[in-house]
Image (cartoon, rainbow, N blue to C red; front, side):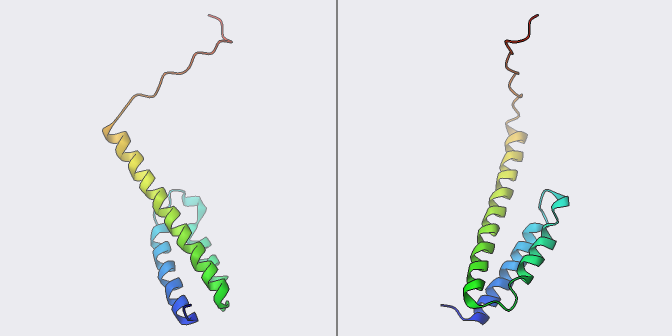
Length: 97
């Protein structure tokens, strides 16, 4: 078990990493940095168990953001180098010529 001071240092490092990742968030209307700040302020002065749970959740969110950015980069590269035309629309049997 880590001390409360070590958990706070880890939370601070996670906050900095998430703040940096939030700068590239694709939707500007989401206000990711404001939500991040509110989330971390909610855990100020919390006990050890709540801090550990919050750090675990923040670590999960960090991994999800990294995965989302990797997928976005993969899709951009795929579109750039393997430019395939979109598939033709499927015929509808209801329409009559």
